[in-house]
Image (cartoon, rainbow, N blue to C red; front, side):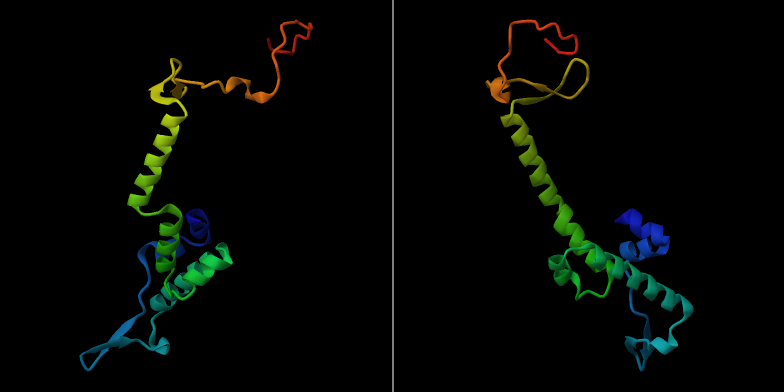
Length: 148
């Protein structure tokens, strides 16, 4: 999604990363949103980039996710919600990593690399080699393309 947003316009991606703030004015020592008619060209461009990013994100998600994020007016807020849901927080990432590590250990994978550096070493097979349903034949049928 990052690459797609950047392909539309680099500034659209900046809007997602940095957020967008409605332009404000101070009237009688009170900060209020600036009327759209009084926006500068920069204010208008930033708003348009946020709108394009929002539209792109809304079109990329499922209806269920759209319902969850459609009330947000900033692309950054939508991005943060989707990022947390799909990528998780650091705590979730650590938990998933621990689950995968535990799963590898239960399958008999060892953290050591093979002699050729090709990855984890299988430390046990557990009788799973015959699970394919074919019995190995002792006879050589003379087919040079067949492995022994």
